[in-house]
Length: 88
Image 1 (cartoon, rainbow, N blue to C red):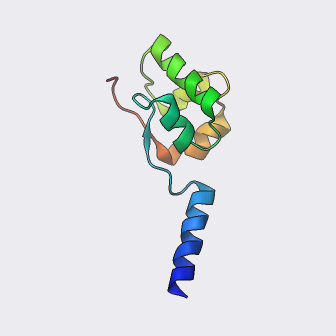
Image 2 (cartoon, helix red, strand yellow):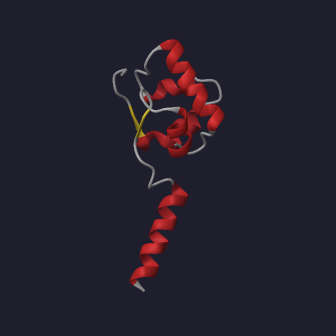
């Protein structure tokens, strides 16, 4: 029974994104962004990296909405897994 509960909790965590690792949007590469963020595939992840390269580091998680294809819903889905650091 205990093993079944652990498996169910792990499955729930993966399905809801609760198990995602925190991602620093000022340093993560496109592959990491696509893998760790809900609703962000390879194209959006590359757009985030391209925006950051062209415009400098993000000052706020909310700045992600400036990236074409990333909306408020995507930011809210991932808010608890997003980190901001200074540029590398």
